Image 1 (cartoon, rainbow, N blue to C red):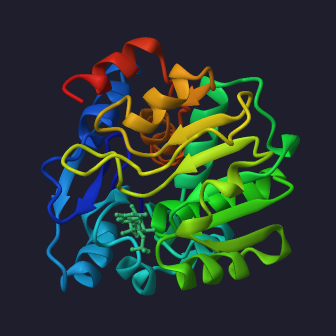
Image 2: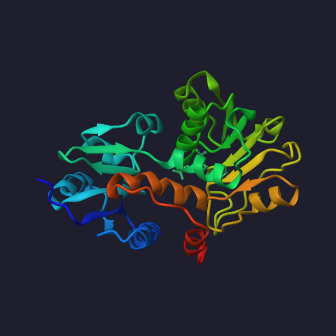
Length: 280
Ligand code: ATR
């Protein structure tokens, strides 16, 4: 019944997908743990997502990651969506169960949070308000994780105000939506600042924000990992704020997915961080 017994197949579905670092990451764990299996790029053009998702079962895949632009499109082709993926509104991990059901999960939020806790073990969600810049897919993952972790207030700030308001409303009373002009005033009393916009990424201008009003004990987190130290993180570090970079999210979102497919919880070591940071 189980076509994959003895050899585990997994991969990452996206378009394009050749730039993805996930095969290197999962390949490292497969080799390190001495497992029988492989993790391959799965380039799937838009419009063929349904065929590809249904094909996972026929091909004997244990599951796959899902990346841009398919994280929302895959959802209608799955048998089940877990509550966190439903809250985020996107799927980054598909697990094919023993009985052939396709289950959608989203590990981006828990991965981001685990990366933050690894980098700054002293940080507590309850410590104070969190300011989240951006209201796209990454912001949905980060805010869902913050709400689940018990953040007392989540201030969502976005260039397009309506998207911030809609995301805040989907999280219930814990979150508020704000326009971009408010971003610096909202740093007053914050315990955490997270950038989920594309600003600061290689090829993009730096994030336009002055940190003067941010308490020095506040942790600054960036989901951008190219470069590893974004201008935001450099500015935060220069004034003494603790920081957490985007590589932590990339590495830690992969752990629960790997565990679901291969049945072993992998480790994020300093060696793995260095391997994955090459060329960033
Ligand atoms: P992702 O899935 O990575 O979160 P996304 O859904 O495209 O990507 O979201 C990108 C985020 O970056 C959005 O919040 C976007 O703001 P808008 O909703 O107004 O588009 C934000 N963003 C992009 N360019 C920006 C800029 N120049 N200044 C501020 N925010 C920007």
